[in-house]
Length: 251
Ligand SMILES: Nc1ncnc2c1ncn2[C@@H]1O[C@H](COP(=O)(O)OP(=O)(O)OP(=O)(O)O)[C@@H](O)[C@H]1O
Image (cartoon, rainbow, N blue to C red; front, side, top):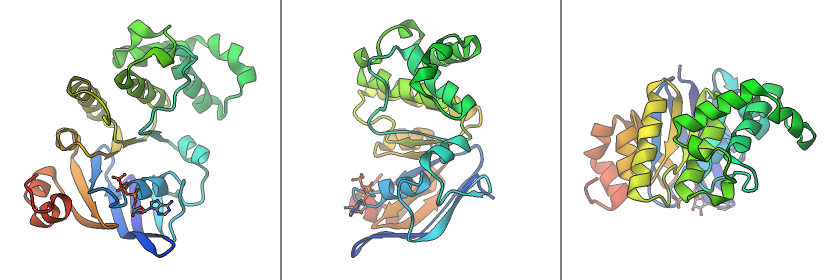
């Protein structure tokens, strides 16, 4: 049984069928990429995984628990973290503070601003946050306000904010979107290292260099349906995928 299982999910917006009988089985410890052309339904599928959207029919199960009906906060508490396309960080706070907040929220179940002074006195959480910043090569900037970071650094900060919660599943929505090639390659290396330690990941990504560098398995969505699910080397040569995804061009 997969850590994350999507079974027969359907979702329509008015007359438009955005997802048709979607199935996904994400094995523990794997990196599973979801690819597909614009409008294929990738974001819709991701949103059903984090309960931002309720499927019309079908089920989403994580670690044996149904996710449909949970609040996004509850989903986070059971071990699912996600990195957004647009980094959601606190620009006026330092990097260290940004990483300490989710660590505190994870441990105590919630975070209120009244608890701020308490957060900063938490030695263990501070150490953990610093260790993660070091891992993401951001420790030299731990006392810089997050708004001053480059786009690539902001995305890595957000990754640190997810990882500090020690999730069982990390959802990455175009983790390298808008990055330079050098930044993209640094991010790939970091994600590879994290994946190498056994963290399960679901990655939605347009950049094929990123997909083929990271993924253990790939599911291809086209017009709301999964048209292929296979090892990366088999996806590359799949004529159905080439046809749907790139209009017949080679991946
Ligand atoms: N809230 C919504 N209301 C109506 N239609 C929607 C809504 N969200 C998505 N859609 C439609 O559902 C289809 C799938 O969209 P979705 O954003 O999931 O695709 P995508 O694969 O993520 O595309 P992209 O790669 O461009 O982000 C599209 O036709 C889109 O216009």
